[in-house]
Image (cartoon, rainbow, N blue to C red; front, side, top):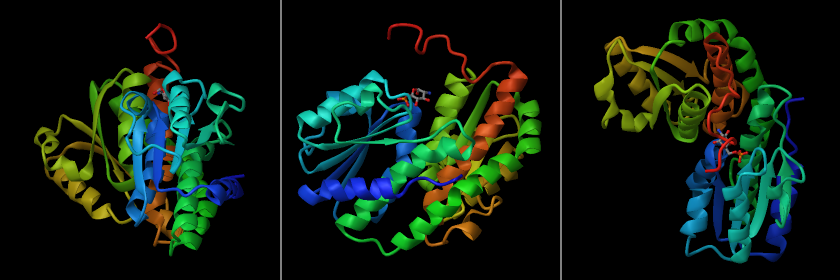
Length: 327
Ligand SMILES: N[C@@H]1[C@@H](O)[C@H](O)[C@@H](COP(=O)(O)O)O[C@@H]1O
């Protein structure tokens, strides 16, 4: 119920490598889809000793196409709805340069799936864990590239992690109901909320801020990496500003703990969403737990956002401009 099909990324990467030498990997998407490629990019860039690994918002890839894009580049494009024009165009940019393109989407047969080499379709609606399938498939593709190109000592640990993390994520989401409701009650009239995270979860803070808050709730928001907090934004710390800290259960946890200590020192209003509270590193091998944090953080945060939307009577689907105007 909570698994993704790991054979698919494995087979796709094997097919690609059977007749192409891969030296670069590009992850390309827009908005939440770009953010959800970030854990894969983070994992691969951190662990490869040979590959050039980059992530792009699609139009930057289209307008300022990297000089190294060629037939030795593996491009993973991603779009939930499969119709975002910039990302569909990125497929063409990549194919024109001779790159291998894999499209990751929720919608079979969508524009994103046309003219590419392989397609992966991920779930979304079934439950909270399913909303993290996109992150999971991208990470699985990154794992297979690493393993099949140069080998990875913790490959088996990652595979075991995939078999556990979606259940941890679903349980996390199911367990935060009362806390999420209380937080939403306290913050429903807030004018601004800041989101902080580190490591593989950095873009969970970014996407929560940019999309769940600014796009879907029209609440002003900012976001930053825990390491950057002490290099500017900590000047805002007091008992009036609001923060949400995604604490990692993994290598960068000391960075998040340092932020928490500072926030508490000045009585900041701070919600902590801690992957350790949900038992992440007890369930997945500790050697690789750090890379699975975004899946747990994303699932739990969704419940907080849903309660906020309910209390504010502002559905997460409400838009003024997006998909309504020409832009
Ligand atoms: N907030 C939405 C995101 O949720 C979405 O990911 C993105 C691109 O849409 P898609 O993922 O369908 O390409 O548009 C907006 O940014």
